[in-house]
Image (cartoon, rainbow, N blue to C red; front, side, top):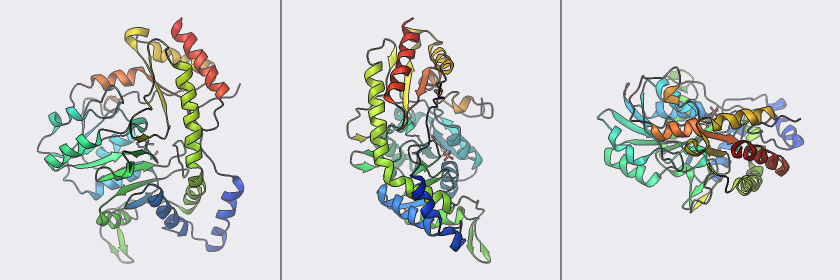
Length: 373
Ligand SMILES: *Cc1c(COP(=O)(O)O)cnc(C)c1O
C-alpha cells in the first residue's frame, strides 16, 4: 500500500531542470545574487504583481529579515495569531520582540480583527497576521486599526502564494507580505521564500540584511544574516513557475472532490472555498470535526484510523504556538477559545496535484465510516 502524505512536492520536468543548471558548470557562480536569482526575483515580482520583491533562502528568514528591517525597539510588542506554524512566532521572538497572542475567527481561522484593539498598548509596534490555509485575513479592518495606531502590518502569506483578493494580488496588502517556497508549499524552490512590499527603501535594507549587512567590500553597515537564495533553488523556482496555474487547477479539482464526497456528513465542517472575490490556491484541505457532535476525540481518532491505512493527515496547527514548550505561559494573550478549538479539532487532509480521485474517495470512505460509527 502506497504511503499517502499530506502533500507531495511539485517538480518540473527533469530535462528542463538539467538543461537550465548546465551553464552553472561553466560560470561556477552558484550563489550570491546570481543571474538565476535575479531572473526569478523579477519573474515572481511580475507573477505576484507587487511593486517590490526580495528573494530569500526560506520563508522563515524572510519573516526574520522583514521584522529586523523595520527596526523596532527591543521588547516591543507584535500582535499575532497562535494558530500558525511555529516559524511565525519564532521570527518575532528571535528579533527580541514580544508576541502578543490574539484569538482567531471561528469561520476561517485567521486573526480575529475585532479583538486586536484590546491587545494594543504603548509598546505595540506591529500586527503579524497569517493568511492561514490561504484564507485571507480581514485586511480592510486590520489596515484601519494599523492606521489608527500607526502600526506596521506584516502578513505571513506563506499559505497564500498566487492568491488574488478583490482584484488585488495578496502580496500588496499591509507593509509587507512574506511567502514561503518550501518543498511542501503550493509553489516551491526546494527551500526558498520572498518578501513583497511597496516601499522602495526596504529593498536595499533587505538586500543588505540577507547578505551579512555588507554594503561594500570593506563596509559592513548592519548586523545581517545569510539569507540568500542559491542558483540551484532559483532554477527550481524558474522551472516550477510555469506549472503553478495548472497545479492550482488540479488542486481545485481534488478539493472539490473532497467537498462533494464529505458534503452533508454530520459534525464535519468543510473549508469555505466560495469566498466572494477570492482566487484561492487550494493549498490545504482542513476539516473540522465538531466535538459537540462527534465527541472530543474524533479528530485524533480519524487521524489514527487514516494512519492505519497508511494515509498521513496532519494536525495543522496543534499545539498553538503559544502552548509550545518554549513559549508556554511566557507572553500576554486574551482567552484563545476559538484558536484552541481549531487546534484541537482540525485535521488537514492530503491534497496535491497527483493525488488520485480514487484515493480521495477512499480517504472520504474511511472518514465517513469512522464518524458515523
Ligand atoms: C512554511 C511556513 C513558514 C516558514 O517557511 P519556510 O520556507 O519553511 O521557512 C512560515 N509560516 C507559515 C505559516 C508557514 O506555513
